[in-house]
Image (cartoon, rainbow, N blue to C red; front, top):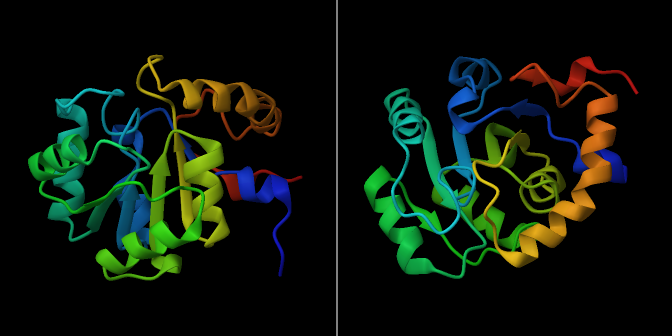
Amino acid sequence: MRLRLLDLLCPRLYAESLAGVDLDALAERGIEAILLDLDNTILPWRDSEVPEESAKWVREALDRGMRLCIASNTRNPRRLKLVAGKLGIPCLDKIAKPRRKGLRQAIHIVGSDASRTAVIGDQIFTDILGGNRLRMFTILVRPMHHREFIGTKISRLLEKPVIAWLKRKGLVGTKAFKEASEIQD
């Protein structure tokens, strides 16, 4: 079954931040592994200090037995490995989201399969599109900071009409954690 373009761009859930993602709700859905985007999802772009709320969320996920991996398009592997080391989780750099190959490698690292893996990120055209192409459980979070790579800023311009559509459908808005499947086309 082929997915429609808007289905590929639509996250299954939306959260205001990584800390706003409900781990109990993920566990109830059978999610056992999570792929995390780095920049503006775990921490602001170019930062190396993990905010306490992100570190706490990662610790809670690990304590529940979830397997995590940072799956990033970053071209700075040294910074990525530093952050992953601080959090005690594996990482992959330059995975070229939304391409499937890097995401499949990350799924392999966490020892799961796509149907039991969630991907959490702040960008529709990388994190959400890539995860949906593999039929993973996709979660869009609000970017942590407005400071971004120039390519991301350009991508954000293209995301605006998609975000507007998501808002019209009630998928992104005042509720921090809303089930996308509750919204009818």
